[in-house]
Length: 341
Image (cartoon, rainbow, N blue to C red; front, side, top):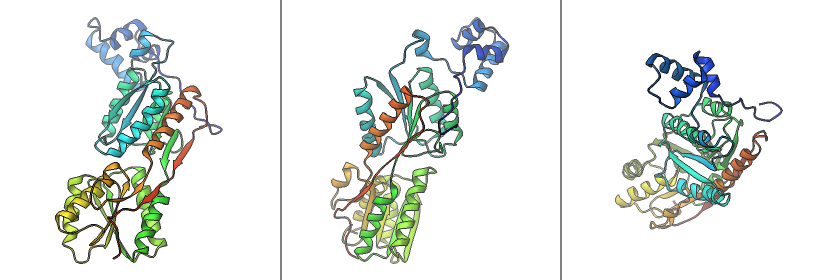
């Protein structure tokens, strides 16, 4: 970056491939179009050159070189979490109003699958990408997108280090309110259940819990890491229901874990709000369907989606604009799953 503005390399061309492989442009074109007229050795040489310089065949540009595709790509790490469905609704609202279409891909927290989807989307000539990076995504992922001149916005998680636009949430405000409420109810033994995933939101949320616990003098803060699934959360709650020294209150990394623990406690005849206090994170619709309702920290995924889509449209129109980082406030929503010690 220079003067606060992202610098982008020119997208590799077919002529670049031909020069790298030492063949004519016509021969390189035959290779990318899967023609049987090219020998195996030449094909291998051209494909190696394509991989080395990051060239992909733009299917949309092949039919209409001067036009945009009027499409964007969105890559989500976990579509089984209802939070991301709501996030997509916010993105779609902006994209649809702008007359664009959206390609949606599910990386399943796999950086390798994520790379594959980026390649497919580049082949179809998407005008830009909104990505919630999969767990374990290296910084080079964003560097490659910048090198290719691909407009990109990171949502919720970041590996770009400020090199691209980003929309996230203020983890601290909602966590502070949740811990403060538990402390006011007399809880001094609070557990935090986090997901075993390596990404920035995980680190930020855990840090927010530790900071809030320290500010409110929590004498015992236990941290447990699990797979972020209903089944593992149910199993954890059943285990904690048998422990006489277990925390009297729990805060969960997300509502998938929170709802799973809610069911696990209830199955063990431990009633949230009476025998134990329980708080989720994200405030998905299902938190108000269980009984007692699951208290949660609202993270406003629709607003995050709206802002991410608007940032991407701005980036497409003005590729040299300074990268912008936006945060959406969070707030605590109290329900019947918490009560006095």
